[in-house]
Length: 290
Image (cartoon, rainbow, N blue to C red; front, side, top):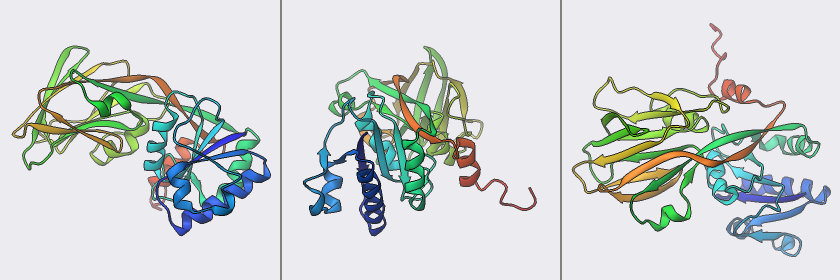
């Protein structure tokens, strides 16, 4: 099996996690390739002759292992793109809706994966285009969790004129607007009052960020909807975020958001379903009165 390993932050916990992971994969005689910058941070001179490094992936990989939190997986998606490489996350971060394998479960979880005791959860992504040239968006224009517009260097709210399939919906007067996938519904959107949507649902959710009008509520829409946004405000620019990546755009641009034409394959262990993860992370049932 050809395995890619990706991480962003280095710590003692990360080092111990990687050591356990490498020992397991070497026993399985896997071909191991580590993202170049992460490999440098790990400082593994004794492994330099046996491990490869990557700056880009291709379809020859059988699995990508992300070491970190959910944010690390979101960054890993930019490498996987549309190559259909399954992704599994080892959680050295905090919450972990996507990175569900705990550091003390690495060997058991990977044994299950090597024995094919898992299923693939296909996750929708969003793609964004604008009616102007922008190098950053030309290189990577997709997001797994959400695409959001928000105010930049101002305390004033912005107006986000929103159309769905060409039909006017409303103009949100708020700090911004989140367009979330089902995967992203447990992230930024949730913290702004949005609903939780199960991964297999064919929906998106529009969630305003701190709206001035309290009647502005999250809206669930079909995922075949094309969303068009125009932003106005006291500043000439606003921020467009694609998961953890941020682009500054002028108010003059029109943004079009729709579901991307490919999906990401997330590894889901048979013993760790989305509902199991949701119940644990949301602490449902922890209150003895329930």
